[in-house]
Length: 153
Image (tube, rainbow, N blue to C red; front, top):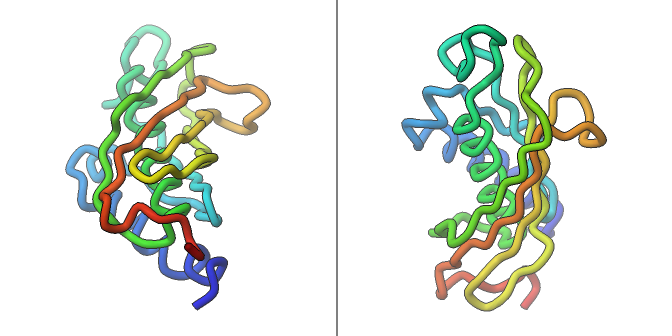
């Protein structure tokens, strides 16, 4: 199966399994919207129980963090081309502004470098467009050494 076929067919199903397999993402309602060769876009619906500031209705920062971390992990899986064990080594998030109340939140992540044992990812959380981010993230993930090979190598 060609790399693009893997990303388009098999990995979105694995993304759904990752979303349902984690009690936190399952409870939050995280959905995988799209998976590419080295990218993933996830969506989280607005729910009143996610609110961090009751007066404004803004989603809690921890929900944004979860969404970004999970999107980054799925982008790493897409870049690897197969499901494997990974772990977040480092996650830096810059919060730009509060998320808009009553709006779904998206995260788009891109795995821009796969090393032998570490993958590097950038991500953006937003409501409508990545040009107006709620937050951005940079992350590093530890890779399972038995499957830490970029596709085609």
